[in-house]
Image (cartoon, rainbow, N blue to C red):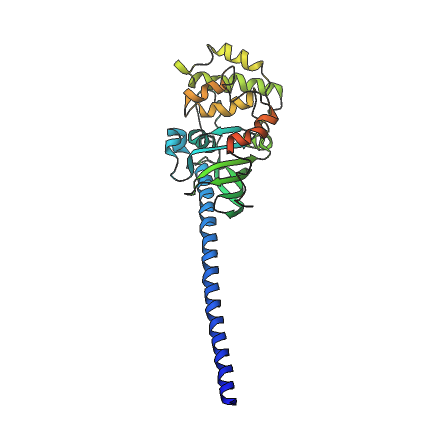
Length: 312
């Protein structure tokens, strides 16, 4: 009898151990699957964000400036991508989104109408300082774009100038392309002062910028059906009467807004020339904070939960 009991006990113990091993193995496989799933979407989302900023740096941004949004690498933005980049404004659709991300990046050594002295500064690298993604459809990031001098043959070539910080929330479609984005560029005025070396708070500098920089570029690029001012004199008189504004809030009927948008007249003048014109073309216009920054979230993102993981 003792032998039978002993055998039964050892048998039960053996079965328990076997069950434990099987359960442990199943749990390990389940955890591996979960971790693999987490890694898969996190790696995918991180890769999309990294590729976006890599396309922002020089010379990777040149194809978009020259050929428009059609030159954007595949898989970065959904065709219906919509979002906001504060303090620049709201952007709707693939063309708007990609142009404002990539074509606004500075090009070193540019010459032409309205450029009295070439600026050789450009974004030449990026640093992904922070990234988190708790579900496949949502992520957030903090990125620094490093500005250095790009002037081969010059002693200053490669010299560090400054960097700009962008904090962003992203929502991705089922393929990992950005569907919605809400980004904030911090201290843009201070960065611009470092980038240009100019004191644009000085009234004389502001007036000179309109006369020698902004209006010549507008008049050279906005011609024919895209003309917005009948003459240099009209352009100067109209813009001197407007507030200069600040790069910490470019969204308004001011000069800094037009300094931003005149860059994009190189890409789609038929779209962007009205933005630098007398009325601002529904871009460089004065806005209501409650409407554009708060109420418009529903119109931009389809809901107030666009950057929240489902069920959280």
